Amino acid sequence: MIEARTNAKVNLFLRVIGSRPDGYHEIETIFHGVGLADDLTIAPTDTGRIEVNMQLLEGLAGDIPPLEENLVWRAADRLVTLGAVNPGVRIGILKRIPMAAGLGGGSGNAAGVLALLNEIWSAGHDGPALLGLAGDLGSDVPYCTGGGTVLATGRGEKLTRIPAPQDMWFVLGITAKPLATRDVYERWDAIRVPNGLGSAPLVLALGEGDVFEVARLLHNDLEDAAFSMMPELRAKKQAVVDAGALGAALSGSGPTLYGVASDEDHAVRIAARVEPLFDRTLVVNSRPTCLERLDS
Image (cartoon, rainbow, N blue to C red; front, side, top):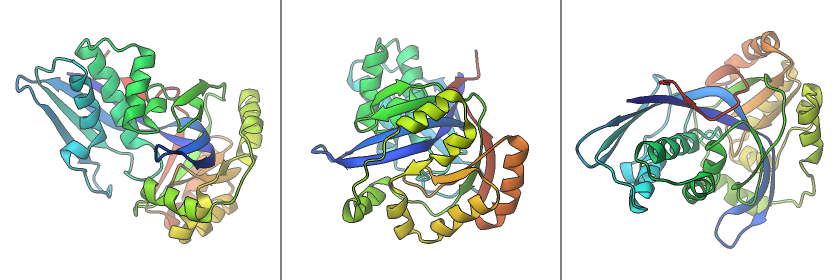
């Protein structure tokens, strides 16, 4: 049996450039991995089937998707469709990352399963091919095949790894009520305001290791759309700043908000102040990869 975990991400920067003919959106974003992870196990069986057992950590809200809508099942099935021989596999997932929260939990699960089964089944897909398969599953999945700090363009599949501080600290403010990515982008389409802001200043600040400047330059074009759908998020973001965060932003399409702290102690103090406002508050630091093997 293989044991692994897949880490969450936050978006330090997200600009939506416009709609694409394929139904996705052209974006420019900076992903950064953080230490909130789902547990993943892969065990061989002799059934010839792909079995997925997904469980939510006690207290975690959300609906487990039907089997064939689950990104994990779709990742495994895609490999089989392309010729991988599956004698049978049971995939177990313990969810700690909330679903539909803007943290890339499902995308990380899919990327982890794709990479591990490609190895286990000797499917033979090299790095570029695996990225292509990941892109077929969802816009965040290609990033999650590697993780760390990455500038992503296109619909999220064109990746450039960038230097960044190795140990940034964050406070995650999690709201249990989900926001569907598709719904938030549809609202952005309805209210969009052209924005020429680019990621270059933030890339430079990350490269210089200037956490204060990184925090000042946080940006997410989807905030207005998400805040219009869940108005209380605007006040919660301000509360994170008022509690002492160097900067705060929405992650992805939300509803998770995060604040940047100067160190772990600072993050703990911020979290204590804002804890009453959120369904769940966590202190996390940077993680260099999405997929972490635990059995090797």
